[in-house]
Image 1 (cartoon, rainbow, N blue to C red):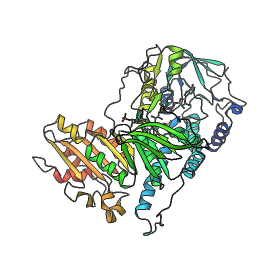
Image 2 (cartoon, rainbow, N blue to C red):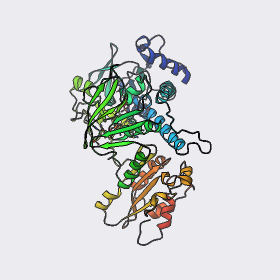
Image 3 (cartoon, helix red, strand yellow):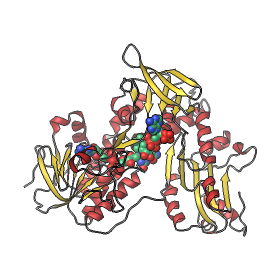
Image 4 (cartoon, rainbow, N blue to C red):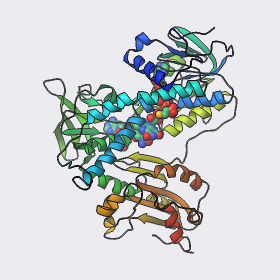
Length: 525
Ligand code: FAD
Ligand code: NAP
Ligand code: COM
């Protein structure tokens, strides 16, 4: 009989979200004295169909699916909650900080007018927001545990690192568990720049920021990196009133596929005061007399530059946590440490699957959850095939930037008759036009029109099919999820023009299509 928790197994225990919050708070404060948080069914004698090693988005969604199919699963996670890095240090804080960036940009743009207080020269606290998150995250954590235990009937052991023994066996604090399959969802961690001074106090990545920020950053902040995380945090720091200097190895935001969209995005970042140095390599971080960061040294196209600062944030991508699987199982990985899987999410070791960030890019929530779900089906004997393709994407600056399909440049390489529809329209005064005027940009549209966003739809004029969509503004990314499916099914401008819009909406794509759908020979708009 399994009863492996500390006093009082959680199986069928009537918990609440509040009681889970207390449990998790206690465990985070003193993990050792809490011991294992065990929710294992002591009466079920069936073999586990799969042990999910890691209970992040990938492991949790995979488990829920396997359980829904009637199988028996067990999750083991070293943290005292389910859901993994998303609610603990990755997506959820990012969304909080990006919301702060958008709110602060609005407040600063209309500072001293209407109901906005005068923010001229005012710096707002970064630490207060980080502390707010650290205190508040226990809420989402508790919901994950409550839902998984009470509503999804999942079996799990938390606050307990797992050790892989062989392809059917995992050891959890001295006790061994066996399953028909292992499904590894061990996640990834931030890459550290390999430079002198990287361990100084005052140097952070997204994870250490929320765990260890112990001072209010000074006037100047250096951000190293040029992709989603660097930009999202850089824009937040900037919006608080800091001088932000971004050191970018190659090109900023090269993942945005449409050049007009990318340029609008970067122009607005610069306009908010962010200094962007492309072609810059971090050379070292200097210490002050107190053992904290005092300056950053970078090699830039204009020569070596020393920037005085007490706060450095770096975001250089992620490395999958594959070491344990390599040591224990000899599992095959690529040169970046990602576990290699086939389209059935099988690794090089029989009966071992891998999912989520552990299998490399795209390291996004949709893939974590879907790969978990597909691995569960495979482990239950279904023939599946999962390779992420054609997904919609987004990031935050002070805005939300969403895209899917092709950018205009790539579209023109692939199609001979590319038609675009954009807002603001392409004209010499384009940036002064109060379009798009949609949700959450109406004040900008009235008073600072060039801040009201940018959007572009790309169409193959011959087949009339939509082949790309791009948006800078607010509230559009939700629609992009569904639009992506329709576009993969061959959505045309004529079909889009038949949809029913809710005026005003963030994207305007439906009414733009209706304006042009009557044309035999499509022209740009
Ligand atoms: P994780 O959530 O990292 O789960 C891995 C789990 O394994 C963890 O719970 C860990 O405790 C556990 N574990 C590790 N080792 C052991 C062990 N030995 N024993 C037991 N347990 C172990 N994606 C989006 O789609 N949208 C966003 O807005 C977004 N924002 C992001 C912001 C940032 C700053 C970052 C860094 C990422 C963001 N992502 C976003 C990506 C997203 O967070 C990840 O793709 C997703 O969380 C990966 O889920 P996972 O289950 O694969 O890994
Ligand atoms: P990323 O998208 O992999 O980008 C890494 C950045 O670091 C790039 O700008 C890269 O430059 C730079 N870089 C890498 N190694 C470097 C080095 N040695 N020196 C200098 N620069 C270096 O990673 P990320 O932005 O850190 O994000 C991590 C993961 O989380 C990604 O998979 C991302 O998709 C996900 N995430 C998602 C969201 C979201 O959905 N909104 C938000 C945040 C993070 P080059 O361009 O020159 O290679
Ligand atoms: C979301 C975590 S923050 S999970 O995907 O619901 O497990």
